[in-house]
Amino acid sequence: MQPPELRHVRPEDDPQLAALIRAVMTEFGASGPGFSIHDAEVDSMSQAYSAPRSRYFVIAQGDRVLGGGGLAPLAGADESVG
Image (cartoon, rainbow, N blue to C red; front, side):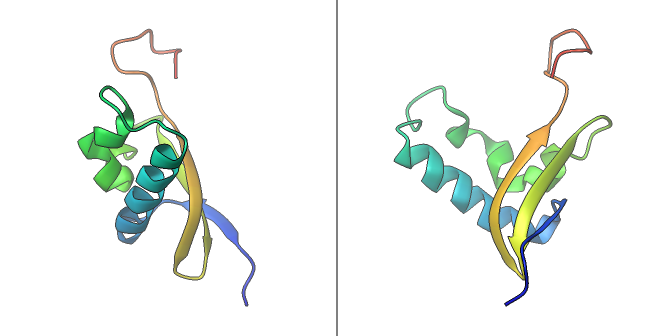
């Protein structure tokens, strides 16, 4: 078995990542109105984090996405706020 690797998100990761995000948020009760679980960008994290100063990373083992996290400027806020 190959070791997990940390890498930039790829478009082919999007379906697994969306399923993982939705499963974990639901598990922790973050599934009601107003939570990001309902945001369209969850289905395409590779695209959502393709803007300048934005990055999304995944931990993957082979073709399986195990987790992820991203950094980006906060829309509508001062450019120094992420």
